[in-house]
Structure formats: structure tokens, C-alpha cells
Length: 402
Image (tube, rainbow, N blue to C red):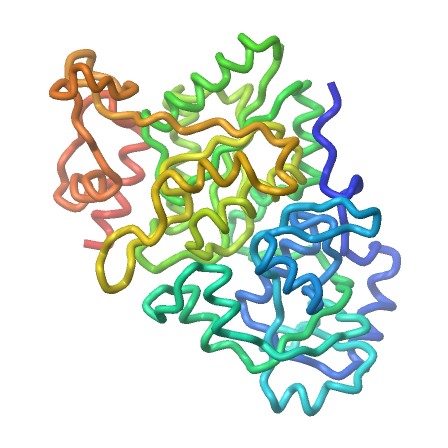
């Protein structure tokens, strides 16, 4: 069975072909330059590999407005593709004055390394309040993405990107950063007839594994012969108090070593997007990007991409709106959404199980906060909560920051 078709019918690839890179880099040296930051670089990575297909560069104003107001972009044939989060490049008034008449701009790192050429740039005002309100759902600068938007430049510039070389980070994790094209090749090599994606920005415990393994059995019951799991942690910018990416990747590898997940039918890779903490708006982006990577099924949990309000401490988003929105979102109709059942530690069986309200007293709710508390205090969670090697990675990390 062929893999699900990418948005727009063809996977975008914005990398300059290898035999043309020398000429493109020479051209880039002659063009006016704009210094980009690490956040911009992560979005260039996303765009270059086609995660946001069919988008071919930083958003022009019509794409930006469609994204923030409709969570979708209309294609030339009239069809809509989902695109719920803006992918923008902001610039200062000074850079706008300097670059406004340029036909092309070289985007460079602060060390002078040329990263990409932005062709036929289109400049437009950055409506920061509207940008934040429509993307995040609040305008309180205690929210990390609102804070970022409010600190952006006064202008946005869109245009078509030509990326001069593959984006790498030299952090000993690049081998995990498989592009959508590479993932599709891996799924085909493994003979997958269904691909189900699971995203986390925290360590995997046996409750998560229970859900992933049950999903595999459900798909087999539906007639799929070889469903493959894409365990796909988010690897771009996250809040300082989230578990670092290198620790999470070691922990995920340990989950496979512990035999909690089947290595033969599991692909572990890094999704290079930055985190927005945008609730139901952002979770559409997480799902849409996995379509382009070949996923036909997407597991969604309680309060996906959620965050507490910076003043009240209460959830900004209804915990179940993410699940509901994904099943109604424009452009995600071809993706099957699998709802995350609530897992808890069953004290009777000594394993993680799906919560049964009829015997609620038999279950222990071990939240992420509780898990971190165990690790900080040098305590061990109940047997069956997490594999031994996987827990050791978590415990060592929290011991190191103590």
C-alpha cells in the first residue's frame, strides 16, 4: 500500500542541488545580507525539507493572513491544505530601509556563514497583537511565544527560499534528524502499510508505550499487516524547564533497549520544529507536518501543546479541544486521529493501565511533575512505571541538575 500523499501532491525540497551549490554560494556572497537567529534557522530547516509542503519559503502576506485567520492556505486549484502556525521572518526598520529594494537577500548566521537566498522578497507590517492573539489565543507576554512575537521586528519579509546546504547542528544528534523524504524511504524499506506518529517533548513512560502498542494492535485488527510507529519527539526550541533534547533521545533509545517498544516496527527521529505552546492551533501543525513525513495516523493526547496561564496557573486551553479540533480541521481529513486514552499506574497489576473509573482507588496518577519529583529526590517510581534503563537516564539527568 502506498504511503499517504504529501500536501500539495509533491514533497517540497528547497535545498540547492549539490552540483549547483558552489555557484549559489558565490552568488550569496554578492547579495545584501540579513543576519538570522537560531529560531529563524529552525524554520529554514523545516521549510527546506518540506515539513510545511507545499510552502516554498517564509510566508508572504496572503499566506500569513490565511494561516492566522483560517488555519489553512488555498492552493491554485482551489483546494485547502492545513497550515495553522505562521512561518515568518521578521526584520527591523533599519534592515527594511536597507533591503526594501533588493531582488534577493542572503540569510546568514551571526558568524557570517551564508544559509539561504530569499528570492523576490515581499515586505509587510508585522501585526504583533493580531499575530499573537490568533496564533496563541492570548496576548499575555508571560507566554513564551507571545513574548517572542512582541520582541520581533516591526516588519515581516516573505519570499521563496533556496537553502545552500543541509541544516545540521553538530550536536551528535544529526543522525536522528531524518527529513520527510528520508522517513518515507525508511517506511517503504520496512514495508509499512500504515504509519502512526506519536510526539512528545518529555520522557516516554510505560503508559505512553501502552498506548502506542495498543494502537498497533488496533491497526492490525483493522486489517493492516505491518503498521510502523514513528516516535517523533519535538527537537526545536522549547522552554528552559523542559527536558533537554539529548537527554530525551537517550531515554527514548533506552525504551527500545528495555523492550518496552519493538525496535523492528519503531522509527525514532527528531521533528525539528520549534515549540509554540499554542494548544489546538499548534497541534494542527504537528499533525499536518507528519502527513508530509508519510504518517497516515496521528496519536493525540490530553492538552496537546498546552501550557498554564502565566498569571492564574490554570490551563489556557481546554484539555480536550486539541483532540476535537484535529478531527474537524480543514486539510487534515486524510489523517486518521487516534485519541490518547488516559493511562495510570494500576497498583493491583503493578503495571501502567488504562484508567478504570469503577475502581479508581486502585490507580496511582503519576504526572510528569511527580515523575520529576521522584528523580530529583533520588526516589524510584513503582515497578512497571518505566523501563529500568529508561528510568536511569531520567534519574541521572535530574541528579546532575540538582
